[in-house]
Length: 384
Ligand SMILES: *[C@@H]1O[C@H](CO)[C@@H](O)[C@H](O)[C@H]1NC(C)=O
Ligand SMILES: *[C@@H]1O[C@H](CO)[C@@H](O)[C@H](O)[C@H]1NC(C)=O
Ligand SMILES: *[C@@H]1O[C@H](CO)[C@@H](O)[C@H](O)[C@H]1NC(C)=O
Ligand SMILES: *[C@@H]1O[C@H](CO)[C@@H](O)[C@H](O)[C@H]1NC(C)=O
Image 1 (spheres, rainbow, N blue to C red):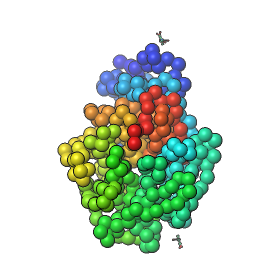
Image 2: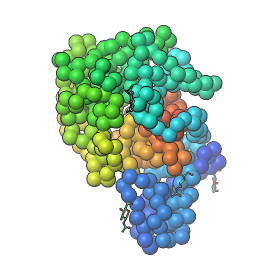
Image 3: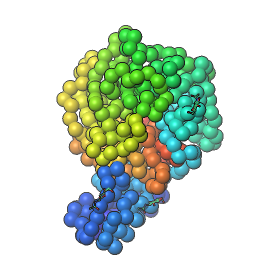
Image 4: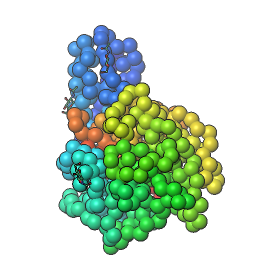
């Protein structure tokens, strides 16, 4: 049985390089094979069967890999991916697409860049001209790690900075670059180091407090607690933990109706010393969100990545879950949890960390810079 399916007729003449994997075709493989849970199926060379080896080598050259017909319908034949900014091989994070100014905000995160990893600046990319500039907010924002646009403003979380400043939630005006601190403590307790955030349709916050900033030496505050996701009510600043893990907190994203939240656990990536073990946690959990927003119930294992771990997570207008997953961005079905396909960033040293949606386009940031995926068939940006 062939390892790949033919693309259906509506996908004739795709602009990008595609593969449509036959899961039934891969079910009973000939010969010897092996890969680690941290590498993509096509990133291995431990393959004895020449046909399989050729297929995997081909997959390693593609832009889009589909596992499910739905992925073809979502992405469509006109999509392309372009590596628009080639930057140092280190983590890039916190992408936010600013519609009003047609810019992408993102950051270089942690070591080896900055001053011992510390960054008092961020990037703004003009997505039309591809002009990239470094900006400093007023006053400066140190070690930004996550970003969400809401009502035209940038909401950014930080890891904190040495022993001077613990983690913060700040609001940045994208035009004036004026910055305001909204939250920097949990009733006098400092946060460990924010990794990311989500904002629900009513404007309430979910903040992921992680071990990563401390583990990479960006902050000197001893970790106050295990990694925790906090809910913060916008109007009252009522705050409480809604999820706690002995793994690690990382991305977070909410469904279009605000009734389901997705939280990956990334205990797999040890914070100190930095090390990745296939026995660490990599699960993507789904929870129902109570009316108040402040209680998460019905925790269930939605998915576990085919390879590597899920970092940044975003949910599209129609509810598809997009996750930075190392070799590319995985698209996951919110009902079944199956991985529908992967948007690849070129293999090798390149790594997809997080992403931001435009209307029928998205940007991926990670190790190796910025990728622009355009011509996507479905509308991606959400209503709020
Ligand atoms: C697409 O290509 C296939 C195989 O090459 C062919 O059978 C089919 O007629 C084509 N469909 C269209 C709509 O061009
Ligand atoms: C399979 O690959 C893993 C990860 O690279 C390695 O640790 C393991 O020894 C390999 N197993 C065999 C039987 O070669
Ligand atoms: C950066 O690290 C070097 C070597 O450990 C140290 O000498 C220097 O003081 C550090 N700089 C800052 C700003 O922490
Ligand atoms: C996959 O492609 C990348 C980029 O061209 C290359 O660096 C890597 O060695 C390839 N992996 C394998 C297993 O061929």
